[in-house]
Image 1: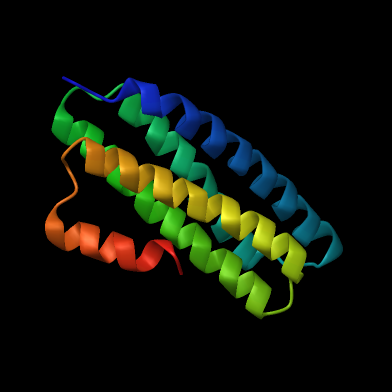
Image 2: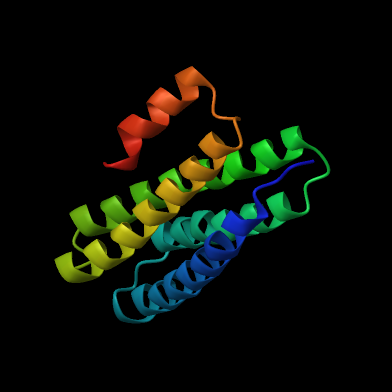
Length: 135
């Protein structure tokens, strides 16, 4: 299988660092803001990005690789939603929100780029990705 391994390194590093930041944010939101539900969802989706990217590096087929990276992309989109919700409901101040959301969007762009370069982003799916990456 011809997997773009050169692209996996930055994705794995960035997704791991992002997950660590989100876990620290979750701890802060629980301790200081007494917010438990949405921040727990945020941790689940944010940590799943890197976990699925990691699984993709050990894919046994092109379809397996695509599946794992597609799941990682979906989890990144879900993470974006939870971040926007925390911001809109007053749990995340603007500066913190922008920092986290920018990192999340960067992960979305990396994932989409890998899917596109592997020739696995179908036209309908890629139109959806292109429309949502910038939101």
